[in-house]
Length: 137
Image (cartoon, rainbow, N blue to C red):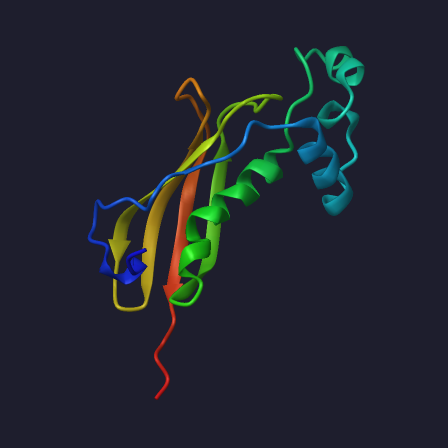
């Protein structure tokens, strides 16, 4: 693992590919988040809502993007996070997370981030502002 602070503008973090989305992932997330909307866990309810099947919580997908930065927690932290939802995530989808450094200064690094499904379709896109820790002596 190289230091995040060695990246140059245009460099990418190592992509992260998640396991296929499972019903149990979404049931666990519903319990953790308190979002019990049945379109996320019950096929019949999703279909009644006009969906082809259950869909992942948007915030579940968004939260997973933080996995791109977990290797670097000793160097800094996610200060700000903004996301646009671009598509639905279904059971069995395999998401790959990406981050590209677009701006930096001595204190912060700005990344364009996205999650794409197995068809290389973006399901979310956004920005992450990563604050570098100030060394203490």
